[in-house]
Image (cartoon, rainbow, N blue to C red):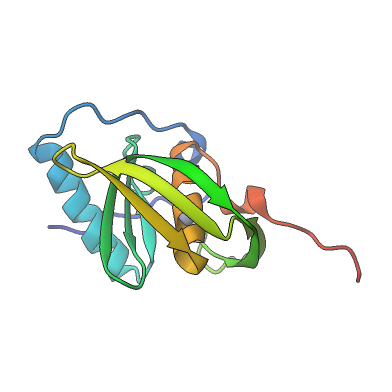
Length: 150
Ligand code: ZN
């Protein structure tokens, strides 16, 4: 495993759409392992492949109950709403409030191509949405809610 440099805001690759993974080979395995190491070293809870400069639909997450690798992830259902602070390893020091679903169900493949279904609430639900957004070139700053004076 090796650390890969994290792409920062200002790099146009972050606005690009990632392509579907078709080959479940050693190269994919290496990418996932490197992303895992990079995410933990950077003390993040999620990382999308585009953030290490690879336009493939691959996400790694480390929220609560352990490590998840998501290949070709898709949100299959959402429920409710939560409003919380969000940040991103590609936008160091920037935090803002976003609206995300309270409960999110995702289907994704693992490195061998096998499909799984995952359910997330709270931080995990936000993380699913945040990382899958990255695969479509969307940053959390595009999900920020600006509240009127209340
Ligand atoms: Zn991010």
